[in-house]
Image 1 (cartoon, helix red, strand yellow):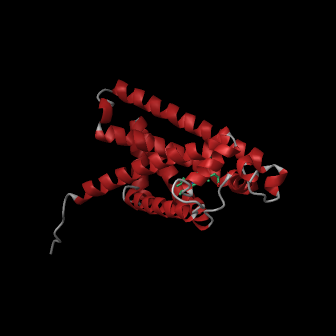
Image 2 (image 1 turned 30 degrees about the vertical axis):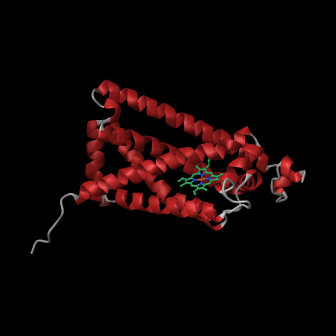
Image 3 (image 1 turned 135 degrees about the horizontal axis):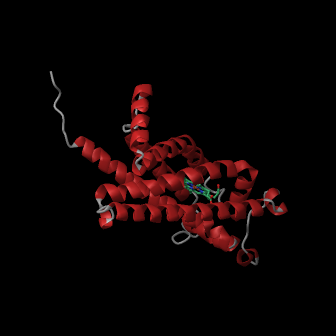
Length: 240
Ligand code: HEM
């Protein structure tokens, strides 16, 4: 007996995958700017940290808000990953057929899809480690606490995630624009090429910003006070 099937399901799943991806990319870009506030000085990053701990609404820091955001992002990330796994070739035969096609076509967008799969798998393996750390220790974020984490080995995870997330997010946005034909950007091969160049430039900028940010944390992480475990206290608060 044939089970009844709703043929719209694949389209809904595809929509959910695209939408969850878009939300995650927007979050990641905002996140990079928030983290890179350290480039403006310790006070700037301290202010951003307190903002995420609810300083606009509460008199005292509420780190559980950070845990809540981490949990929400994790759930979105899990949904996006599960939906994406449907599309990855399964087993040796499928992979061989796919790479054969890719080489034969020498089509940039098909090659970009492979980059998307590889960076997606890297994120699947490593992003949860970062999210779990912040979920469990939401109060350990700040100019000194974050710098100490990065300087004491956290830079390895930071570098892996930075490259994987910026490349994956950039290509993901490009694919969404092409798929939905936004901005008339895919009407001609010339326009599509232009769009690709804009996305490459954006990814290069985000990588540069991320690397500069990591260097700033590494430099702060080497300070004696940070290594001694001292938390950052802004001059204004210390004066009270
Ligand atoms: C609620 C969710 C998140 C919060 C609160 C958060 C917070 C932070 C903070 C405070 C840092 C600075 C270093 C540290 O303290 O360890 C950082 C760095 C970083 N995070 Fe997240 N993060 C979140 C989610 C994510 C996700 C989902 C990814 C990627 C999959 C990610 C990728 C990175 C990367 C790549 C860096 C290094 C940035 C750089 O190179 O400048 N984060 N994050």
